Amino acid sequence: TRQIKIAPSILAADFANFGAEIRAIEAQGADWVHVDVMDNHFVPNLTFGPAMCAAIRPHIKTVMDVHLMISPVDASLEAFAKAGADVLTAHAEAGPHLHRTLQTIRALGAKAGVALNPGTPLSAIAHVMDLVDLVCVMTVNPGFGGQSFIHSQVEKLRDLRAMIGDRPVHIEIDGGVDPSTAPLVAAAGADVLVAGSAAFRGGSVENPAPYGTNIAAI
Ligand code: DX5
Ligand code: ZN
Image (tube, rainbow, N blue to C red):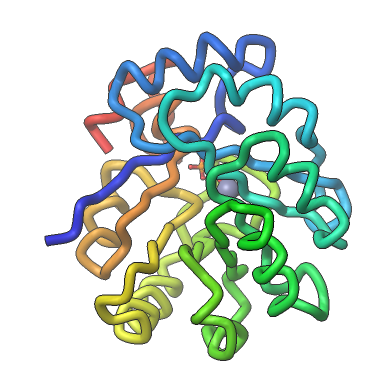
């Protein structure tokens, strides 16, 4: 049976206290820590780069799951790998050389992930499946936390699960995951659930509970 992992996204955490926030969420049972890198070019938001990733790495006891919402991406891979990313996920839409991007991530010693925006079909990764350790299905349009789950992606998720079969490739769901949508995606085949607002603010994405909550509810 598939073991479901919860990967809280620090995009929803207190940006002035990442160390403490990471320790708190891992103490509550986080399996991975999802780190959303945004460049204000690939997505309309700007978060942080390799220096911040390197700074928080010593505070992460579990897995640093770095989600690169940046374009171009190839020139930045080494810096993020050196910062300590355990999983380095690039977007299929970030440039023309996805095959080389994934080869480079693996050559740098990180697990290679590929992320698909809601409008991108699975065919975009049909010829790189031998190079991926993780496929991230975006269930929101990337750039912000607290958005609503895009239900049309569940069919993509089911098709992806069939495509992967029992090969050792993680299926990560990213965006709008909360106690109401988590069971849906777990049943459809996901094994890593990213949660930002639901993890750091509890409740549901639409109605976040007071700050800080137990992620077991997800
Ligand atoms: C969106 C990010 C997601 C986001 C998830 O671009 O990639 O990881 O932080 O936040 P919630 O769970 O609040 O949708
Ligand atoms: Zn993300």
